[in-house]
Figure 1: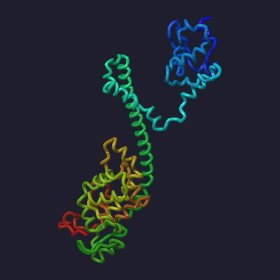
Figure 2 (figure 1 turned 45 degrees about the vertical axis):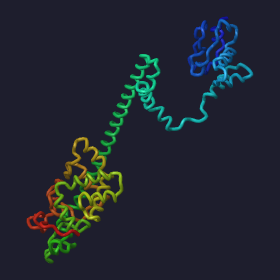
Figure 3 (figure 1 turned 60 degrees about the vertical axis):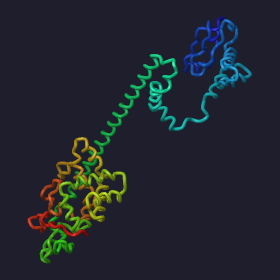
Figure 4 (figure 1 turned 120 degrees about the vertical axis):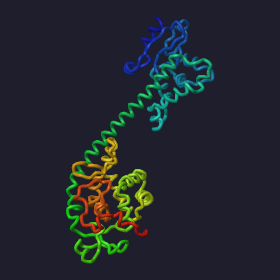
Length: 388
């Protein structure tokens, strides 16, 4: 019988295992490989003319020994020690040799799955020492590398597009949920802050840069010859320097506070508070109220803010029930005690001082009983009060 017929009649693996691999017997007139497989493609078969009557299991052992060469070690060393020629034992011995003792580390698996390896190979092939071998590179190799390079680029673009789509979906869903929650809270905010703004306690002073204190209502303040500085009780921002700052920054305060929030986004309250003191000029206590409000807004309104960046509306600070902006969300969640309580903490703000600012508001949200003549805070603070 020919050697090829003997190889087919005496399979190396069991029928179950054979079905999982592709076994091919090549021409045996010259030196050839017995099997084109992951385990046996390194075993070179001796000339069939000299060994045509030898069973291929024995031939495999001798070939492994001859292929290894003198003084070299192969994965078939343990096969030579077997007392019989059982192909299954030979297969298991080879498998034991090639199976790593430990599974690769997680970072190695990440590296193998990433396009970093092919990219480094391409860089080495085109720009490294490989070009200096003197033999050059075949057109097939260069073509393969170019294909790998573009495959990497396309893969990165696909991943980037998928991540962008995921980001858009998450932000859109989050913004929708935050808008619905803001709409539910707005009636409570309107009732708590604005419905009785002109009827409750007031913060009034006896003279410019003088004593400033809380009075039960407008009538009591007038009877005691005190001028109302703002509606509502005094707070941590009701000092003279903070009151003057409310007016002087009326056109850009929201933007400057937002800049501090962006700059100190990943830092704590104290860093944000210090930024508000340095970049805007608030007193330390007043800046603490602003820092708490900004942190509250970042927690409850971040998706609305991110969505506004898509439509170039990050600077839209309008507040109205018909248009839910990040300013509206902040007011609904961070000013009336549900959960943030900025208004009670700060006391003074531009609404309560009847100062028209960069945040457009309806007239019902402006205090109407402020005692400054002609509501001209600019003339009133000229000259400004001494620093506290």
